Length: 172
Figure 1 (cartoon, rainbow, N blue to C red):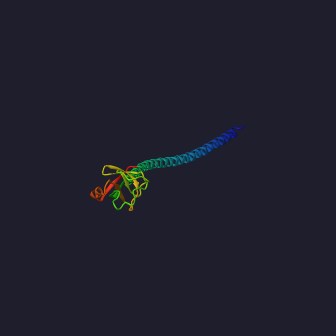
Figure 2: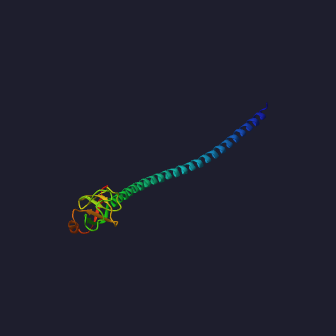
Figure 3: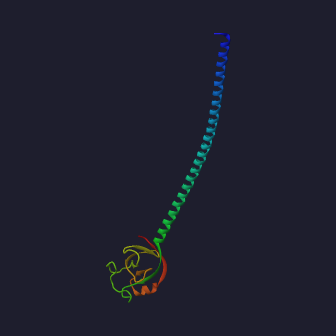
C-alpha cells in the first residue's frame, strides 16, 4: 500500500471516528436533556404527591375532629333524651276510695289501692316514679294524660293535698 493510500485511509478512519464521536456526543446531549426534563417532571410530581399527602393528613385531622364533635353531640343528645325521658312535667293530684270520683275499688292491675301507688297514663304499669322525694308505683290509669294521681288514705288528705304542678322523675 502506498503512503498516500495509508494517509487517506487514516484520514477517512479519523473522520469516521470524529463523526461517530460527534453523533455519540449529540445523542448523549439529547439523552441528558431528556433525562433533565424527566427529572424535573419527577420532581414536580414528587412535590405534588407530597402536597396531596399533606392535604390528606389535614383532612384526616379534620375528620377526626369532626368525629369527636359528632361523638360529643351524640352524647349530649343521649343525655338530653334520657333527661327528657327520665323527667316529666305533670299535674299532680290525689285520690282515695269513696272520694266520689274514683269509679271502683280495684286498680287497672287488679290490686286494691294502697299508699305508695299512683295512677298515670303513658307509662307502663309497674313503673316507679319519684315525686317530692317519695317513690310511687304506677298501678292504675287516669282519665286525663299528663296527670299523676297519687293514692291517699282519706278524702281529707286528698283535699289538703289539692292539685299541684311538678316535675317527676321516671325511675324505670
